[in-house]
Image (cartoon, rainbow, N blue to C red):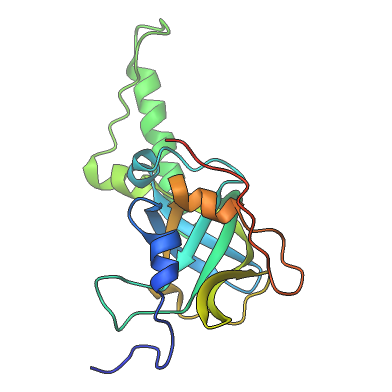
Length: 201
């Protein structure tokens, strides 16, 4: 078997501390990325399943795939949600949504606040409209290091590299995963980890 990215990443601490199913939940994929920011492509269903994506919340971006050892990276990017981002089809989809709302408003004879508008988009169009872009700032990188012969999880405030965006999953940190992120101070030299919070579900 040929390694997808040769020579990188056992990634065991990254998986157990940040990427395990009880520490993160997938909310989309990276649509655009550079050294300072990224755009996450997400969907209303994924946002609902994750309990929403609040502004300024922490997300993770990783090329790791637990089901395919060929797709592996030894770094996980830490993102912070800054706002929304336009997508290439937004203009057309907004026009379709606007027209469906105009039709629903025109056909509704009952103006009482309890009436739910029936905007008939159709399943295909509704699914397309449900995709949105989330603009994120890249805060730094989690990685594994050897300290006194022991593997430790470290955090650095830089991005050494990034790969083809199609390989990156975007995840929302939850529970102990969020507690792990909050336990790292802003890097100054070699980062020191402090236990600051415990997230109670």
